[in-house]
Length: 490
Ligand code: ADP
Image (cartoon, rainbow, N blue to C red; front, side, top):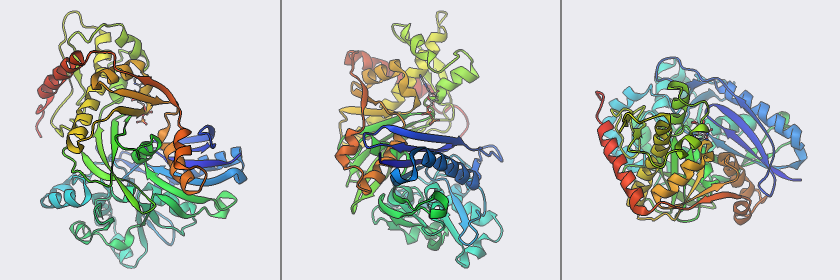
């Protein structure tokens, strides 16, 4: 049997999965690695922890499937996380600064006058989330790095590049367009690093990885590491990989990942329609053609269910919320705005805070559970309406993945609130599947159609609520959001 391997480099752990031609998981291995929090709001990883857990998982899977069965490898990664290392020794000059890390807020404030031009050229807001200010922080704060850069000894990469460079025995320093488009230094119109952006951040182009197509040959793994050279033929960032796995190259397909947060993405093809209150980014570049995407992220999704479990302790397991919500005929007027860390897309209000409103003497735990699940569905509609408004698209269907899609109440309520069909695939590890897909298509393991047909639908949820009732619920939610905004000092 032949397989394609996906290396899924996540924020809390690394996973390797072997997929067979029919899309089945043949073998997998996963290792967590430590999160490092040096100060409030700072998040780091040790790059060797990332590398070692990846190699362990890779070796496990190779020994399970046999080296000769592996056709190619695809990589998917936590995006934006920034690593600088020495090209001679392979040693990082500092820990990886993780996408969640807010330490560069002050650098962003200093550069605020350029935010318009940055948005224009990259599709992104000037925010600590993206790589450029993280690179700048390392250069400004770690002694000797600037001199080592001048000597040509320092390389920058996101986690995909770090692992690619190591897997190829230090031979290949590259990334692909989607990951590059999250650095704030890559112009999404010209598809190249941009001199003006590099000058704004005062970053030298020589440290950046070469940008290749997302699907195509990147290099071979080093024989010493894997026992035989294996071609690496695809890279995609995590959200892009999930969109790819969901067949996101078709028109009018939107995917929503229901994990800790909610991550919505749709392809806009060759068009860059402007992003309204969302982000424009590159989905992928294949066979010379770029595919743009629109993205909306919500900070609190499944994590409001975790808060009911670990903070309030009113449920034992996340799954309990399904029967609790179903035990009520309606929300009975109780709404939960989970602005626990402010509000992201499309409100962008860091001063908002969480709120539960509509409580009466008859309110119980069930109302809290239902209101939390409903909030996930309303926030999704907020972003989808913004996507439809800015692109002029009208989505017929939402394809879903992530841990919380197991909740049938949530899925049905989502279909009702959007008045749209929800399609849940059997395999919800879509990021890994997307990485296997981009690699397998480039290596000839699958055609695009064969890959998409390997994806199996578990269940479709069709709207059951009449549209007016759904709209009434949703307008009450919008009222509640207004009251949660502008709460703390900005
Ligand atoms: P991540 O990859 O962001 O860590 P996952 O995709 O593993 O997240 O999803 C986990 C999230 O989904 C958690 O926040 C959890 O509370 C939520 N979740 C898991 N199962 C359910 C369920 N049956 N109902 C509601 N939420 C759930």
